[in-house]
Image (cartoon, rainbow, N blue to C red; front, side, top):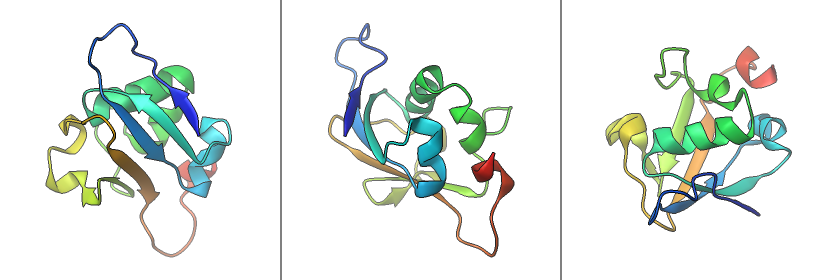
Length: 111
């Protein structure tokens, strides 16, 4: 696992373990999981996009909203039932990003 805290300037920022599906690993340097800093899920996605340009496009619309075929779970809870991208993170939390399971491949995960 790679430890990545792109926001070292923010004291006390939580570090979260992020797990990626096979379809997104290519977008994060082939890693299956990373440790990333962020106060909210949105901050975490911003940090990933800063390190891996274009990452955000695969999980969010240009408007910043979570794409409907992407599911993000924070400690086994779907963030759509929490505060979506504004869901606060705590140190040591585990975040999984999954594409929705349905027939076929979605082109955004294959870009």
